[in-house]
Length: 348
Image (cartoon, rainbow, N blue to C red):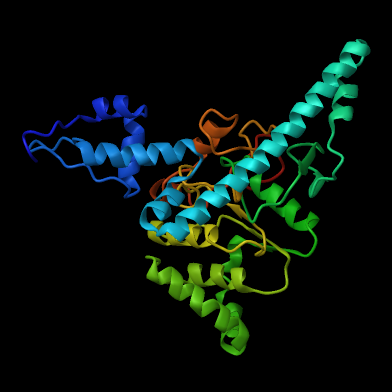
């Protein structure tokens, strides 16, 4: 490295850019930045790295995920225009939602000013959205009949929670409630014989499955019965919704990452998926975009709630804690949580 060029250490670079050293390391981990190292092995940041990191930080402040930033930096002008247009549309949608919320708050403030005796319940009923939620049902045990609602269904919804949190029960209830929904359980791998027979005899299914497997293999996935069973479930026609229990079951980390990228890249209008996971290879919070939703089932059996993948948002840290590496997940493979005083095991 030229002696005349001023190189900064990670702390100095982070201060200049207004980001954390952890953010710089994350940019590097995602292949967006490649700082050189000194003879002693320390990372340093020269003008080129500072400029590149500044571009990444600026795009992050505009709301782009790191995966989107990677595509923008590598893409041509058309791809960048499309990405900016999509982000602008998302921001405009959010502004409309914030404007509606501001209007509701103003109305509630006025109601309370004119009628000080209004109870909280009255205020909440007045603030309820006029549009019916897309999903609404009474929660099963362990939540004791509390109400669960989702205003909209995204193309991809992750269901997260620690062992014993009831997320499998929530998933089963979703599959029962959603119209024409299918549940893809953990027995999918042990039932490979009928799946193979169906794949061998159903040419149309095979024509849908084989390109997906080839795509995943090209992106680092290792072929296995677990992956084949999962892809067959994804390719089956008929169900309007698909709920998948522990999607990472039997998949190594590169395969999980390939599957995750494939699911996130599905075109708009494809069948909505509800995916149970405890793997950070499946749900990388740093790359989670607005096309996905996250439902957290808390360890204390508070009702499931939607979590925005933004540090500081309620529930974000709990979600991050639930997401473990494949090695950690392997240590708890097959473990079923036990609820004291219950008559049987509680699904995770």
